[in-house]
Length: 604
Image 1 (tube, helix red, strand yellow):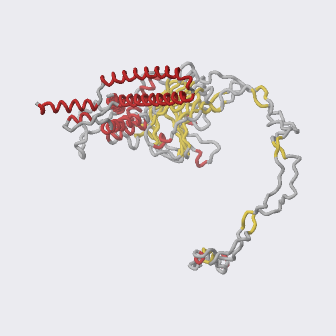
Image 2 (cartoon, one colour):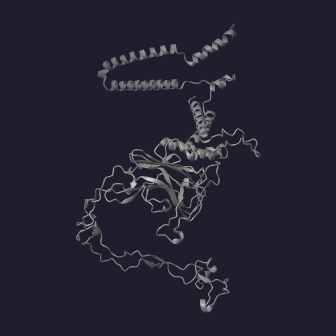
Image 3 (cartoon, rainbow, N blue to C red):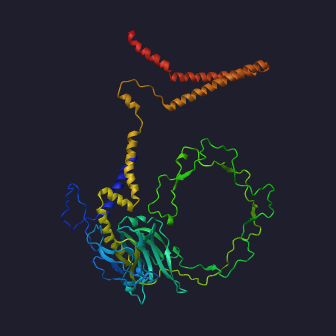
């Protein structure tokens, strides 16, 4: 009964999960009243159509861009050149376009597309309001789709530091930025950058600090050709989170999880300290008292000829192992004056294939049992060992302690400065703000809609379930339970259980054998064993008494008294046995009574 209850609960849970997935991923078109008809498969219901509507921030945002106007209004293409680069590739002449994805599932949804390969690309746009790091978190979010996969290139964004002389047309790789965030890949190295530029409060120098790498495998996000949502959250308490498709893939703290560390060490090694000349770092030395044995022969060879070897029968001494290729021909353009005399290439002699060997036979070489090699003294612990030398520590003159690295430089623009060996990288739905609710609603209205459209285009329910499991691996457990558990329970119910023997005999008039209760049988066997032991003890006691009487006649009176006591005990035991016999008649007596009962009508 309990197993059946578990089965029902699992099935109900699985159905609820699948229904929740369907409700979450599929958005039906409420504005389209006429259903989409299928000419090829009229029996198959049409997939729910998803209607695109440009997202609008529900609150204050420093920057929000969906590209649904179809133009690059507000964006500035860079006209700068990269420094320290060949003139041919120094220009930022890569092309940008605003268009729909090549295989769009959401008609009307447009984005920014990097169109050319093997080119430098740079484009930027100013924020509506500069972002100041004070007491509110930073939320940065945008979408990327590698429509052609990605061979080598990036899709990261830079938050450009606010400066007096900022000119977006001159945006290039050396333009100061506050944060760099986003995917990057080359070869088999899949990265998700989160880099901040931190200013040393003592020296004024700016240094890049890289967040630790995510622990998850990022490969599928670069190869599945799906639109993915990248989110960065940096909080005033210095904590940060990196999310892909609203799932955390990396998190940490700016004070503990950046490389190099935000704050330098309090002490450093003294650069002027030098190791003393007599400092001994050798942990082991050769034993100075060791002496090479007199019989140690350093000149003995490692290998010697095997004098016991015999040339195998059939060895072809006169046949070379390799011969000139008889089928080779001199090339027509061979010039002996320039190339020298032509010789056919060497090939294996076919006659040697069936023989043990060819050529002059030599004794094989074997290991020399007397070989010892060059003698070396044994190594012993160095009594003068002082350990590995290290320079002494001194106070770090550049030490500082910044407990609030969140308070970074204000930024006032966003920029994409990229090189890629793959074209058609799709960017969409950038948003920067301090309100989580605004970011979440923006994601729901943009990426969520796009995801629903892609999900509705999946082939059948199975395809949608597989896609859902790829995004939520824990669903595989649910699928396995839903499929495997019922099969297991059916096997348990059908193939196990005890047969009811009594029920089988009730169906027929066949005589039923006597079945004794197992517990009763054990008690009877135990009782018989006890009675047997008592009888043996009594027999041994009687034999001993007889032997004692024969050896010691003087004790006859005492033995007679003991015998009288024993006789009394025997009489009591016989009385008890007779009583039991009267209460429980034997099987023979019962049979005799049954027989006599059967004979009484005959006498009459």
